[in-house]
Image 1 (cartoon, one colour):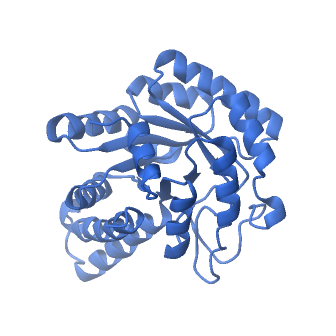
Image 2 (cartoon, rainbow, N blue to C red):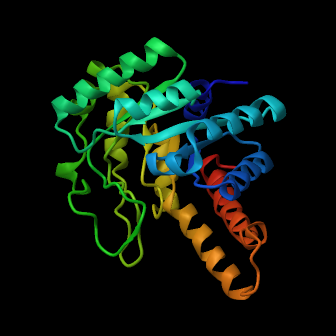
Image 3 (cartoon, rainbow, N blue to C red):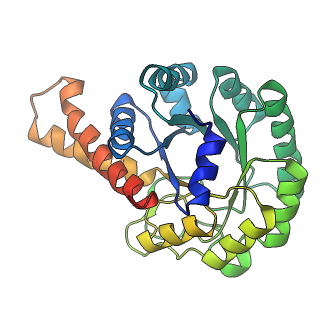
Length: 288
């Protein structure tokens, strides 16, 4: 089976993208894996710090390892948005395929210094684990919002510059890079999501020559996804969309079945809703 880096580079060479989908429970995990299996396309499972604390770091690693070894599925595991070296050490020891150090709120110099420290640690333990880092603040929450998150970089003057990207990548040694290019964490319910700056994506990609990652994918236009993948972003994160599908299905399930108390019955509609949302995204990103 291909490594995660090989999988991402293969997608990049074809102008498509691998979907990265976050989970908090087994219902979502089963749904995402089923969608990827049905479409015969790789997928990355992500867990943020909060999700890792809820789901379990070692538990997640064991489940994904079992899926790969027993069924031969190209399913990978990423530690999404780690904010400290201590939390990164935990997932590295558990055997995650990749980690993201999020220093987007820090100054450029501090972000570089802390990211470099993370890279040096991870590669000293397991050179095969990919390290991703961010430059440019796009918010931190996956909530639904009615106005742009304060401080989020969406105006052209606030986006990650080519010059800063080159310096950041060169001085940190990261494997993948997540710039601010008009994307926002969370999902708007009253105003359109900003358009992605595709020309900035391409300029950064041409300059840094490592795979770029799109965070805050929920709510972005389908055409922007396709353009971003073609410009050098072979990994796309979706979380809020998945959580919303899960929540709405569960709310309806509870309303329709007021006397039911079996979690596996109440959560079945959520699993189906996550499957449908994920299937749609994988099919789009992979141009299937």
